[in-house]
Image (cartoon, rainbow, N blue to C red; front, top):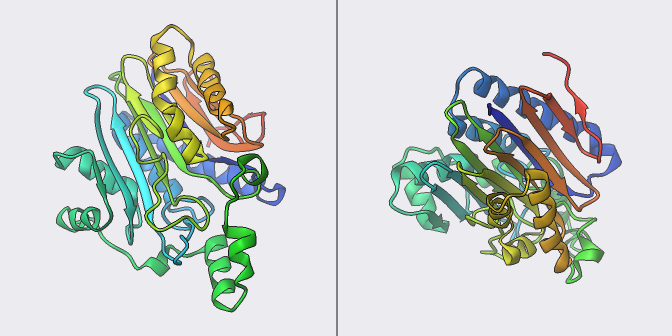
Length: 318
């Protein structure tokens, strides 16, 4: 048994033109977080750092660079769970928070609650000294460009680019569904998982997906493993995918088998997504049924590996 880390930057149909950027973005976050974990950092500090790095990268749909909802606002979701005592914190539909994973962690550590939403979550953030930002500070990259085009009169983009259809097979390969997440096992055997997202394109105001829901988008139990999910949130919620995968490890499956089986549940309802996992033995893995998923895995045995397509490559020493 040893330390291990897995991170993801979203499961969707990453365009060919963005493959290198997604690989490099995941690689940077993986190197940074692995350096902390390898240096003795706790699992909770490691996953917080990994998710923060991905939230700060405008390439990914979390924190800076998040999608806009139907009213042109950014509403963010995040969660974190520590597997020793099954402690958790989560935030949903919150505005003007640059790093929602920090707020989720504050709820875990300094609140009697598990999930805070909207204005209540922002009030708690102010009480905890978590700095707010302007909404427009989060509008960068692809999301900002599309928003500006809509403001300039290209309202057809709302229908053609932002609005997801009712058939996941017809739409979920074209829209950016990516969340970000991380799972780590530290030297003390504690497993922690965290997930963060800007949600889906043109989502209805107040819509909440799987990412802040313990058991659906995030779950950790140090006796078995931890998981962070990404993809079509409505489907992931319906099969409670993160907890389902950990339950399968508890039932005797390997992490690879458990992830594949949980994705089978998602496939049953024609859902699309992926997940990363780290088990109690310190073995990281990833699985997805979308065309691509940006991901990184690290452990002492296999080194640091990253991939966006089916194959993964080992990172050279930094």
